[in-house]
Image (cartoon, rainbow, N blue to C red; front, side, top):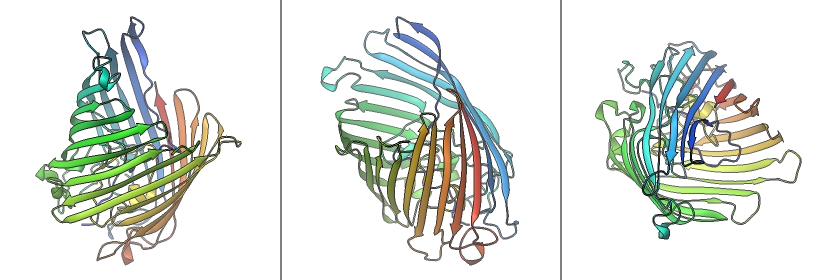
Length: 445
């Protein structure tokens, strides 16, 4: 069985970020915002092409693939402070997803996936000024199906969305891991069941207690508990995360996923400008304790925006390193900053046994147009009989807000692996440069 690979990962710092989200259409507003009900729509459709594929099957033809992905998320959200103390908020949404064409170049979708299901269904309570020592809304408790994100790279969301072609268990091809397509777009972000308690607001000393139960077969329906503590000032924050693996569903266990039960993860992280105007820094150092031993991962990111220069160019550098048996856990989807396009999504696992250097250049000719270029160097730390995913990649992409509700995001990338399927790599046919393109249209109301 070849090493499986995963959806767009590692949402670290929002330097070049574009994250289209539902803005909300106000249906009801009473008492000047005391009670508000919004209708929300977020949708996307993408056209994708790759001149090479990573199917990992010598019997399949090497060469180009073309496919499409789409989704629509639609629902209601609201809040009210017309109660005895604090305010109540909540939301409910459905999501429809699909993939068409050849299926993706990494053999996760077959192009025949379609699914409509509940995405979010959650309720929450905020304390307002009920507990002055904790500040305004110093207690925030929510539960249900919702998106949960922790600063750093351990828990971003539950966005991994394989399809019918994803068969990580030897001899299993029954579609049990199918999540309805739209693998690259990855819009199924909510965890199946959650309980989240946040204390202390967002400034000074604050923290959280979290319980998550994924209903994602591609995540082996992992259940975890987590705790965070942070200290935030105007120039940045420093914090720590602890994650305890509680359980997995054996029917969906593959690779080392069985070790998630009983796994402990500890991390120290930070982000901010360190008092340097227009600068941006972030880091995290994490350690996993599993039955098979200790694993480590870390990243460091530094960027600067030339705010007084025409087009406000941003330059940043990021270094990332994962040890050989690192478990990527819930490192997320299409948000903030990528670890690459072809390498992360299709060409192999870059979230273990890998060292990555990448550089970003971003400029804004107008407030509605952002141009970006990124270069990546992937160096596999150890072969030890595994496939070698060492490679280089360059991506050029832009985000153009055509209207307040429609954004276009075209991209072209060039990926050059050191190895191919015939000599220890994963690219079919040869180790020649793969030309990859995509065009995504985002709609939000």
